[in-house]
Amino acid sequence: MTLIVDKDPEVIARLAAVLPRAHGVDSAETMHSWLGRHTSEFAVVAGPSLALADAIDIAEGMRYTRPSTSVILVREEVDAEVLYKAMQSGARDVVQTDDTAGLLAAVGRAEQYWKALHGGQQAQTQREGTVVTVFSPRVASARPRPRSTSLWPWPTAVPARSA
Image (tube, rainbow, N blue to C red; front, side, top):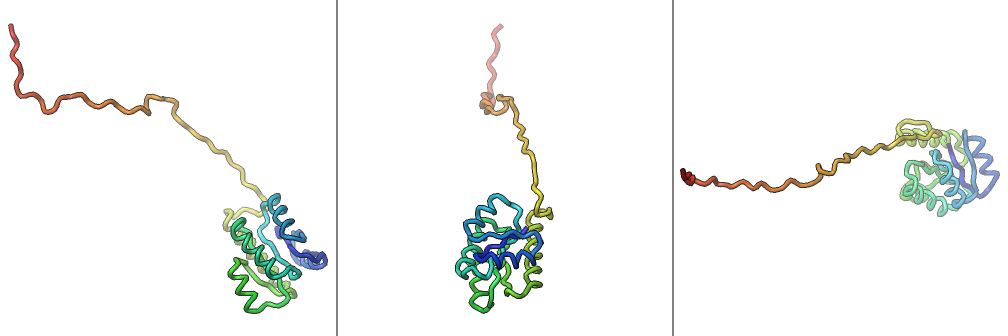
C-alpha cells in the first residue's frame, strides 16, 4: 500500500484519488507511527506541500529504518538541485505534481522492488513460521576424553619370570 505525507488535506485527497489503496497523513511523526502499525507499506509519497528539507529528511530516515519502503518525492518543479538532494537522500523517484502517469509508474516500481525483497509475496500478507531447536540431553558426550596412559616407546627388555 501507499502512504501519502503532506500538510495540505486537498493535496492528500488529490493524490489519493490517483493512487490505488493509498492513505494520507499530515506529518512525519504521524507517518512513523502509521508505519509502525502497518508493516506492508511499500511506498511513501512525500507531497509537494512539504518543504524540500522535510521530504529529504523523510527519505534519509526511511533509507535506514525501512530500506524496502521506497520514498517518492512529488514536487511542483524538478530541477538539478532537487534531483541531486533526492539522489543523496535515497529517494527512489522524483515526480512533478501534474504527472499522474509518472506517479503511477513510480508506485508500480516501488511495489515491484518491495516484492523482490520480500520473496515475491503480496504486500498485505504476513509470513509466519516456527523455530524448532533440537539438542542432545546426553551430558557425557560433551566431556573431554581422558589422555591415554600407554607407555611409549615400549620397553625393550622384558623382565624374566622367576619360577
